Length: 228
Image (tube, rainbow, N blue to C red):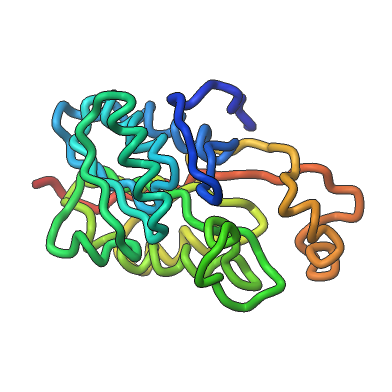
């Protein structure tokens, strides 16, 4: 059943080109709030953008590391962490590259997942925050393949993306990597400006119906078996 994602994320400021909190951020935040973090739980926020999810995890008692490949996002997340008076370790990193050898109780990820006419992820610019190849899965698949190594036994991955990029494939890929997974939250939201701008291309690929005005977002939740 779709849920209301209108609740507010922590107030953040964003530099131009940095992904601001939207419906997907709020849906992932709702899933985060359901996890009941233990005090001091180690949290990794992959692709932190504005830092909104990292800040909420810190408010809930987590010890948070946040990473993003974009320099402006790193600066934005650091500023917003200070604005909220939370100590968050914000690093510039291509996914988990800067934190290899560390394992976390909770891994949060709002990756680029929008199907794009370009087969590649942009090397720079605003579109790097959302474009993810023809099927929207370039970054998603990398997160699935690397998540187990980044989680402690009993650790949880929460990742948001759209029905347009086939969450069933995400579940299957995570399970092949040894992480039992399922879709735990979903919400139907209006099409944003990026999807509206490529509506005809998405229709031609069979990803949107001719009269579609919304998309469905889902949270995939996966758990590394065992306890530390």
